[in-house]
Image 1 (spheres, one colour):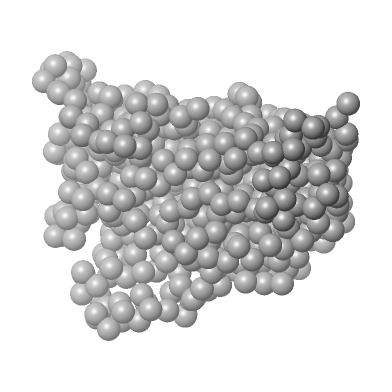
Image 2 (tube, rainbow, N blue to C red; image 1 turned 60 degrees about the horizontal axis):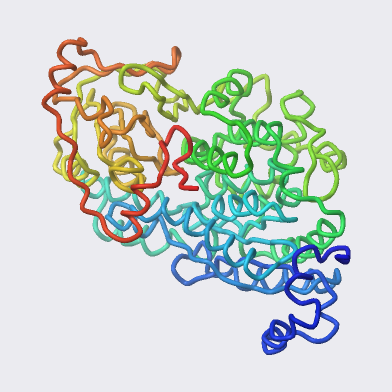
Length: 554
């Protein structure tokens, strides 16, 4: 009979025949008493590859101490992480979304092979966070996610997006090389994820809304006593989950995903949340589609005045109380499901019952009477350019309708050269194609070109359209995830210079104003480009699903 809390580890360490296993474990610090404890795998994404994750080893140790205090035996192991901010604008960025799959696979491999009874994963950057949660859903063992925390602001409230936009400003002659160097040298002061409501902070809040993180753990600075204590408490909480056998399939319901979508919209979060929530839902065997974002978005306003489209940083949201007061308001407005289970062992409503509301004088979170936008900024657009859908980020500041002349480029590099060379003018629709999950491969983020456009002062005057992705730091009139992608013969491949493109966020439509006969003629002439990829990119290209489904490989 399996002892309570040792559903998986007992198969590894119990019995005469498992003496060799115990011998190996003694060498890494196990004592006799540890073989009778629940084993907790702590997946750490620590590395010195990126500031987002450079402190996570300390959080892993804190979580380990929490697990020990609760009576479990923790085992820390590592997985990879790559930096979007460092590889952005280069071919290295092709590996970014791929890393999400590698991380999920690697965590699954270690946890399943070693027989851990529970999983605590700590992530601090865009792809390792959903990668951790995908593994949790796939393994379905008691699990908790810990966010590494947000970075502190740079000098003059700058962040990494400030640097990207400064590049465009310099090329336009708006700032000097000395001023550019000053921004470069002071924008990123230390550990933590990028400081606006970009992808990392968006996903941290989404994961908390899913019920897989402790209350308000998504709203902590990376370098803070509260973040370390949060890690300790998570280590303790996981032992409780193991003892009560509360697994992700008891938490990750359709209603939980609806809560996550609602929270992302209210915060004005990253479009990457669409891609990641779809992938997590796939692993959790929950039926979620891009159309759910439209359905929910009709009734949920954008309330948070946060960067990139707004004015404030995550650190400033933390100062006024974090995310839980917002979630409490959303619950009171009947926009969240309060009856869903969470990793506390309580429902969401129970978790929020004691949360204090924001003070009246705060300016970051708007009320329902004066929202930033009355409905969602995330728009799912269909039309002859996107028969399977596309994802737009429309803040409203740039308007909700754009019609312009197509300027097609077959790679991000081509588009960036054109932008920096002054080829892009007001009224242009910049097309960046062959950057989809298969064709890229890897679905690169287009932060460099969009930031350059912003730096040149063309933000509301130019639209972007791609089968790739946009960074959480991107703002402007942008449409990504265009499906089917150009490499597979999607309509994006048929666009020619000067074609008129219409983007209507009111009707949720995106269309190429070219007649069907002409498009058919172009289609007959089109040839798929050869894919020269090797190694992991080649594997990914063969296995990956459409962006409209989440670009997963499992």
